[in-house]
Structures are given as structure tokens and as C-alpha cells.
Amino acid sequence: MSRNIRVVVADDHPVFREGLRMLLETDPKIQVVGEASDGMEAARLAGELKPNLVLLDLRMPGCSGMEALKLIQRLPISARILILATEVRKIEIIEALSHGASGVVLKETATDLLRKSISTVLAGQYWIEREGISDMSLDTEKAPRGASRNVANKKWRLTPREEQIVEEVVAGKTNNDIAQTLGMSAQTVKHHLTNIFDKVGVYNRLELALSYVNYATANDETPPEVEPDALHSRDPF
Image (tube, rainbow, N blue to C red):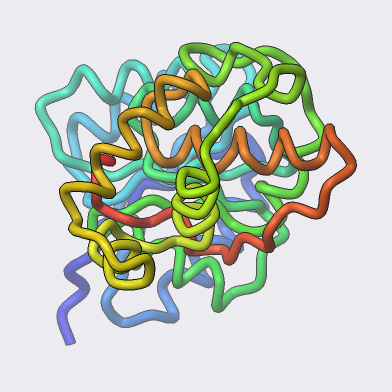
């Protein structure tokens, strides 16, 4: 079988890079075509090798992973970018996603979830695994864009129907799924989501889900359990 998934791995620890390369290449479809030890080298290799996927460590000396992410997004390539992290904060995930990353995977994640995260982002979806959601819910630092409005300390004033829709979004349901469950049209769901985004102060489904978990935690409520792939919906609303 030909190795048709070309990957660049960027991490400043050579032992980790080597181990990750060996792990990835046990899959006959994956080929690690380049390894980088800093962000600048990662951007250069991405431009030269045109991989399908860049696995990018956030914390590297010199040019960081976040700076590399911004550089790669300026290149005329279509690579998906999956952030590698030892630990993550909400502000970092929101920033990474706003600059074009397709998701975040913890370095300690199990092999099967790593493979699932790769296949998910290559399919054009997003990946935020369970541990990342849990850690972010405890961080009340202000994040960029809509999520920076610290929704944990404000009353949303959602209607009962809007609350139902938010819970369905957090559960990973598409507009069509929500419409079927709640007995309305997909267009009506979209209209409700537009109103919800305005009330909560967010711009997309991902920020809405993160804000909901953060709000529930801050108010001593039990947030709904978010599956690792629950935020992958392609619906923009």
C-alpha cells in the first residue's frame, strides 16, 4: 500500500520526534517526510515538502509553535495542522484555532486516539480531545475574540429552547440532528444559533461549546460530558 499521507513533525526534542515518527509509520498509509526542531524550520519544511499534515509542538525555543502556525498559514499549501501539547490552556487553543489549526492533541494521548485525531483533521474536521476540554474549563483567563468576554461571570439569559440547542451542540450534533431531535427545521436551528452566538458573545460552535463548559464549571453546575470528537461538526452554525 502506498504511503499517501505525508507528515511533518515539529518538536524540539529529538527523542520524541524519533519515537513519534516510528509510531506514525507503523501505519502503512503514513510517511513522515520531514522533522523540525523549531518553528522556523517547521514552516520552511512545510513550504518545501507540502505535507498533508503538520504535527506542531506549541513550545519550542526560538520561533514558537504558535509563530510557526502563523507562518504556515501564509504559505500556498493546504496542509492541516494538529497542535501537540503537554498541557493546554483555553486561551492557547482559541488562539491556535483562530490562526488555522485543526485541533489539539496531548502528547500523552493513547495511540488509538492519536490516529483518530489525525484521520479526523485530515477529513476536514476539528479535534479537541477530552483532556483538553477538561483543562480549559478550569481556566478563566481572557481569550481572544468572542471567547474573551469571560462568559462565566455573565448571565446568558437563554430561552429554554436555546438552552436545549446549546446542549445538543456540545453533544456534537449537527443542525440536521438537532432539528430532528427537537422537531424543527434546520433553518430554524440556524436562526436560533445566530441569536445564541450574539447573547453568549462567541463566533462559532467551538467557542460556544468551550464557553458553555466554562460557564457551567464556574457556576458549580455539572457540565455535559464532551466526547473527544464532539466538536467536529462541519456546520458553520
